[in-house]
Each structure stands twice: as C-alpha cells, then as structure tokens.
Amino acid sequence: MSKEDIHKPGWARIAAVVPAFNEEKSIRRTIRAIRAIPELDEFVVVSDGSEDRTAEIVLEECGVELVD
Image (cartoon, rainbow, N blue to C red; front, side, top):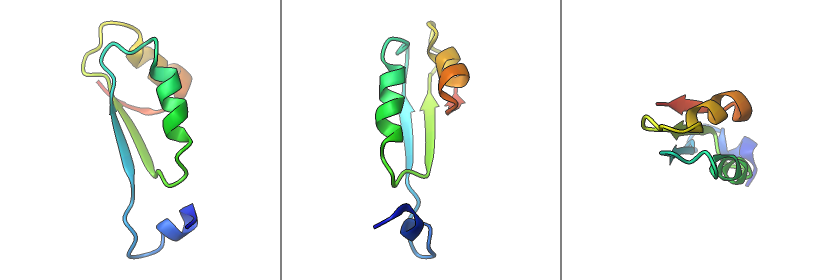
C-alpha cells in the first residue's frame, strides 16, 4: 500500500502525537525515526512546557508542528 492509496476516499489518515517533555537530547532522533514512517499524514510534538530547548529544537531545526 502506498501513501497515495491511503489518501483515497475511505482510508483513514494517520497522525503521530509525540509527548516530549524535556527531551532536547533525544528529540532530533525521535523525529527522524517518526518521519521515516511513510504512511504518516500528520506529526505533532507536545512539549508540555519543557524547561529545556525541546520546543526551540522542534520549531527551528525540525520544522514539526509544536503544541507547548
């Protein structure tokens, strides 16, 4: 099944919501791994008010949607 097949009417869309509280050391690796999933349609990182650079890394380096 290809990503194009998934977008046909009747197919479900797939989203990843990733909790990432104070994950500045691992968030890049996590995002790379999730981006490798071809069926994924949407990707959101929830930093939950992280006190480190997690939100900054997600926004500036990874270009992923962020919910703080």
